[in-house]
Image (cartoon, rainbow, N blue to C red; front, side):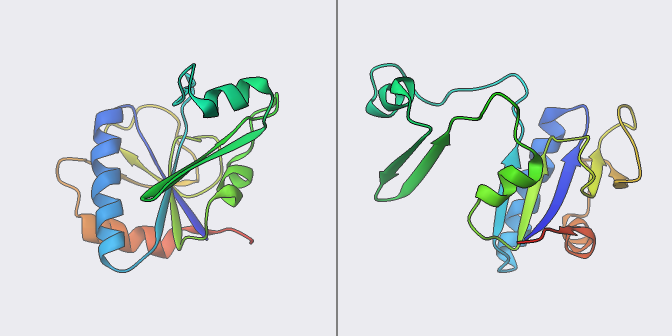
Length: 149
C-alpha cells in the first residue's frame, strides 16, 4: 500500500480534486482507498439501531453487512490512532489517498492557496480549477510513500 495526501484550506476544492483523482486512478485499474480525517468528530449511527446499541453496550467493533456493502465501526481508545494504524485497518489497496493528517510525513499536494502548513512532505501545489488530473495521478503514483505491510 502506498500513501499520498491532499491538504488545503478549502474543503470544497480538496474534495473536488480528490473525487477526480479517485475516478482517474480507478479508471486505470488501480485499487484506491481513501482515509478522511474528521477533526470535529462524527457518528454515522443512530440511537435505537442495533449497531448503535451494541457500541453503547461496550462492543469495541461493530460490522454491519448488507448485500451491497459493509461498514466497520471501531471505537478508538482514548488516544487518537496514528495514520499508519488506521491505514492498516483498510483492505489492501494499491494507493490510499488521505484527506487530512497534515502533520504526518506522507507526501502530499496543497490544493489552493499557499497558506497554512508547508514542509518537505508537500511535493506540489496546484489550482483546483486548472489541475491536470492525469499528471496529478502520475505524480501520486510516482511519489506515494510505500507503507510496510
